[in-house]
Length: 402
Image 1: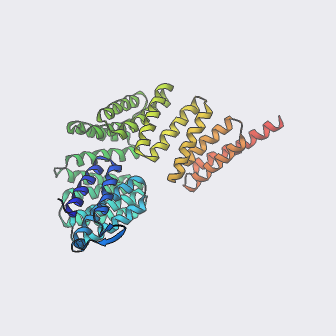
Image 2: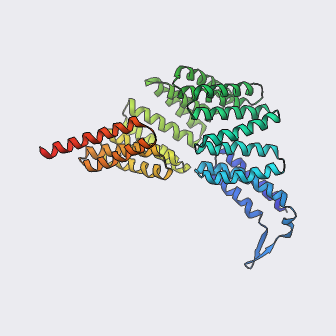
Image 3: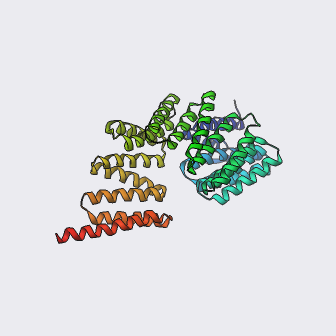
């Protein structure tokens, strides 16, 4: 019969494997089970009885718990619970440092940086990545050093400092080429392409995307192949973009990855919405994407799919359906505290209200959109909505005097 520690180690390994596969629900169930296995008390007839043997192995239990926290933190990031992720990572980091567990300590530093980055606490994220960089340099670990340089590049990218971002990412890429981490090397090539795309250098971005596409094909990584084709679609226009999006969706279906299928269905539908208003095809793509996103419990993507359905019905002048989907999107955006998403939904709901002749409701929606854009520094869109509100007052006055 297995002892408690063997049970915990086995469950920890299984939970980590599910996390790597992206099965967050099963990973969470297993990782939380670790704490049930490791209780210091057993209960018999409702009376707690101390497990004396557990007290003699407290160090080992602390380490196992810390490893569980390390993975549970990633689940919390996925769920948007960044404060909980930060708490768990700080606890685990303290244990790993105390017992000189270098690999785990490094991982906790990087994951804490990811947590801060996810919450746009970019200074703290960079600080964690630089601590991890110094640690990797002390250990002369090229792969870890490459990872840290790439992560620091992402911070510069998030701050729109594209020149510095590319500099750090290129250094990262050069280091990866000295290692056997071929997939990491391709990931970095793709990331440079994304940064070039964000900086407006589409042609240069396509060069990197094509390079990544060829390498992912050789590695037979269909998920990442689909993702880079998706990236390339964003750098293309017109029929070329549509063709690339279609190819990306086909690869996603071959991969069997639910998120990739949903994400590429959403992208393809958006392009069709702009280029070919094929109602039945777009509806099929979007409802399938929405169903998959709900199954995956991906709130931001649920909002995106709902708002795109709203746009479809708005363009078809089916205002009741459009309003319903924009309200679905708004509800999720409010829960996620995504100001730009809320502002966009308010703007479209205001437009629908105007079409319906409800100028008062339109003014209310557009006033909220204006305020959200203003407080987030987008003065151009804020001014545009302010003008629309003034125009609405003029239209309202005209209709009253007619």
